[in-house]
Amino acid sequence: MQLGLIGIHYKKTRLDIRDKVSFTDAGKLICFQKAALAGITQCMALSTCNRSELYFMYEEEEQKIKMRAVYTEMFPEIELERYLDARFGEDAVAYLFRTAAGVSCTRRRPDSWAGAGCDRLFQNNGVFRQGIK
Image (cartoon, rainbow, N blue to C red; front, side, top):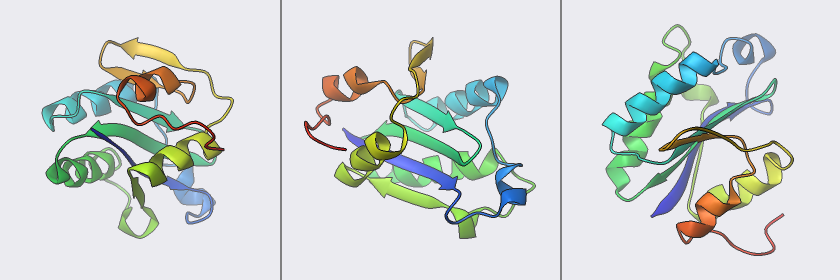
């Protein structure tokens, strides 16, 4: 399994776009259901005033493409392609720990997570690395 990230953040996205691209609690659940249909069983959403990101565990390259579609379909009124950021593997793990430090981990349901304190999830799936800052 590998870690993937699809999202937008303040460095690439204008404020008026960021205001329209955030996950409500209900939106997270819908997104997690769509991710499950794409074969993703572990997914978390990070949605702040500056970022809107999905982190997910994947096994096949096709799942990365499906998750990109899941993310963009959540906000159909906005052309997100030019603002998207995608990272995979160690790059995604490093990015997660750099940007999401300090956000508490909240379990929403057995196969979905929100927040950044979910290091046990990643450690249990063999992608946790000591010393990433």
